[in-house]
Image (cartoon, rainbow, N blue to C red; front, side, top):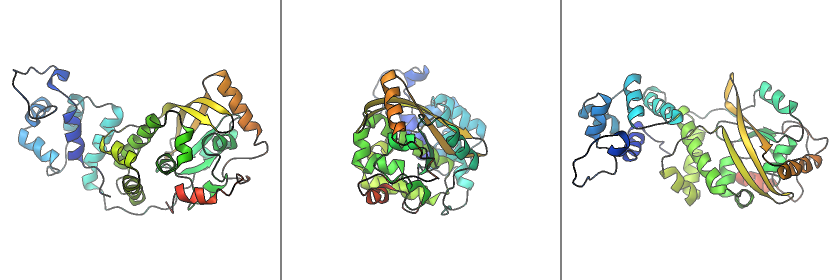
Length: 309
């Protein structure tokens, strides 16, 4: 799949900003564009209209950081969107896509995972959203229908984006599925800008566009975000309603691996987490020993897994 270009991103963001948003006076009459005109944006950014037009047509070569920052300011981009803009501008000079090797969780991330209290759910995710490791509480909370040991096998690793859009169990689990699904799509776009040569990532996005109407619709919206905090409202089949906040921790020497840690945001949810953790006494992190979830779940893991990603 051909990923988003700098020109496409600029067009979608220009359409979202009206003259009134930035204090630009208009003098009546109908406007044929939903947002700013190219000429208006170019003038505010201090570049010629011709140069900006070439940027949107992906024909301008490189763009300086000063120009990109000016465009980001006028288009009212947040930090993640500004970073994405710069990443897209750099893409013009990167080599062709390559098929990256299977990801391995960094030892320090695993050490941190194993040091957590067993009532604290946590999951280690790779750059494409593959589960690289989890503790028992993280597995029981987010994907108890998947084999606990699946993250050990790169071919069978659960893929969170695939689970969210292709697995009915995951959709039923999340009471705020639509909100979280949009978060996943926005983060995939952010990741695609950061890793433009990752062929597996591009193939994942292309697969989801083809197989999920919901993903295709959300991807077309053009949203981008670096998601580090949020809330999950779960309808857990074992312990009922569980509301948890999640926070992402990054290791400086392994920034593409994300440790998501979940904490209960009310006492009943804390009780539910304690109950879930009690079911797995003696089990370690997802890279260690564990017992498969009963019920023949291997086909499910294969269906929503990394597929050699």
